[in-house]
Image (cartoon, rainbow, N blue to C red; front, side):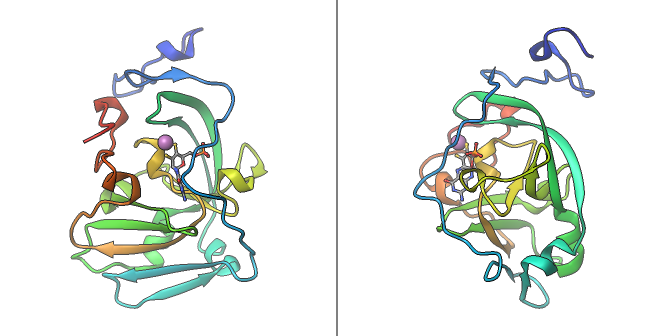
Length: 198
Ligand SMILES: Nc1nc2c(c(=O)[nH]1)N[C@H]1C(S)=C(S)[C@@H](COP(=O)(O)O)O[C@H]1N2
Ligand SMILES: [Mo]
């Protein structure tokens, strides 16, 4: 339901649009561990390995040719800020999935980033609507601090799962902790269940 106060809206499933313990921000905070990797589109590669019939490496052009989509979604950071109505544009996860055809044993994905950051996500979550590898936000190319040239966007999980400077996917048959998950962040990270820390 739309009301004058967007923080009081409900989602179609009846849950509040603003998850518990979150507040709305209008800016866009920058948060990451370590420094911003220096990347070049000419040498940028996207690697796929693990439980796939064939390891694959995509150039920037090849990766973007897999498909393009736009989706509007909300950001929920575990540090309690949320940012509504972000228009993301890029390659839908589903297009990557269809190109690499992971083996049936693949149930989890480790997302790997330039700079060494990792995060773990169940495969079925990546197949949900709105999950994409974004190169643009609100009509503008991502800035370096927000993940240029490409970041993952997983709207229904806390934003630490939306890895910046993504460079590859590893398909696994079991769940393994990524970077923040090793330091006590929740393995799944559902904002509506406040799955912040394990
Ligand atoms: N590669 C990489 N991606 C990352 C992180 C990181 O440290 N490295 N931090 C995560 C965390 S904790 C958050 S809250 C968001 C922040 O994204 P933003 O800086 O665009 O707001 O990026 C996520 N993606
Ligand atoms: Mo975060």
